[in-house]
Length: 195
Image: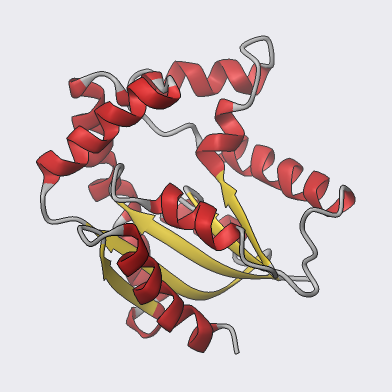
């Protein structure tokens, strides 16, 4: 069974996590942020060590461990009855991160819409990330060099996914608006996409 899915894309700091968490509180939506799943791993866990090794440099974790971890997490959520694939829409944030991951997942997820949260002010995003680093103890958001590397990685690795999924289901949302206005824009498209 393919999971009915909407994807949240955007540069680091564009607000994907904020909007994903809000959508995840709506009945029949299940939010999964791949970065949160990785950050929940213990440093004693082999996948946890892999995550720390790559994220501390602003690099993406290799595709195979990323997909393996994601699939394990989703299976556990289905078993634990947190995610009900027959009626819930999966809201993914942070996966797929590149075309290779999208190819691997094409038999698993049925992508109904892609939302690109776009912030034209890169300095505002850097400030958001640094504030988040302090608030949430996220080492990957604290270092300016790492932040700039993450922004480059997004441009090189993730932006090509927009062509992969095609213009028909890609929606650009201005993330410099207030969070309620961003949510309003998202919901207008979401309701049409998952009819």
